[in-house]
Amino acid sequence: MPVSPETLAAFAAASMILLVIPGPTIIMVISQALAYGRGVAFFSVLGVGLGDLAAATLSVIGVGTILAASSALFMAIKWIGAAYLIWIGVKLWRAPVEGVDVPAVLQRRAEGWALFRDSFLVTLFNPKGIVFFIAFVPQFIDHGAPFAPQAAVLVATFVILGVFNAYGYVLLASSARHAMRSPVVLRRLTRTGALFLISAAVASVLVRRA
Image (cartoon, rainbow, N blue to C red; front, side, top):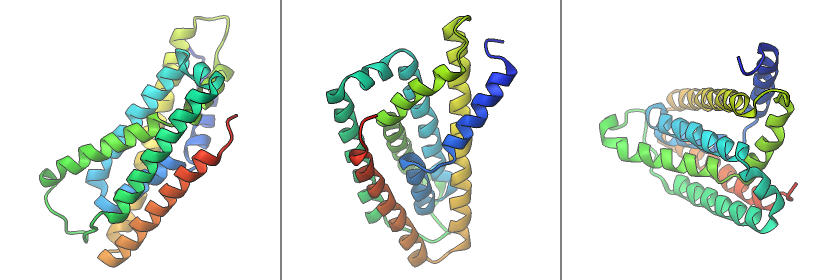
């Protein structure tokens, strides 16, 4: 096995501690679950998983180093990601919110794929995440063993945990959605999530480059 069970367990524990802290991606997933329900929001979970995979893969092949070294590139991606977060927040604010009795899922596939796209791009265009991952993974790498197999196992572990974490938040948010059938309450919750998402975008721009 490329990574020892002890190292893998330590990496998984550290990753879960980091993942359970809600960031812009999780805030977006929660807001989408409140607005559209569990079935449609599941597409956002898939987007998070693919976004984590792409970001982590880019990190381990060296893109994280480029972002850490290039202030201009780092800031450009940060502004693109922040602008996209704000756009999604505005979309959530303006989205019509229905009660629990929603139309058939087949009629909402377009919404689902839009959520997939949004969550993927928000997760991918998070330069702090890419730079963090390239600083985080080496702590669990055995430099006396081949790098690629170890990195593959750690990346796969992080992505799987990230998907389960995002889906857990979807379940919690969708349960709250079913408990509160009033469209007025759902609208307020969704708009609260939208405000948090926009605030997270603003905060991400204000965070100083490490």
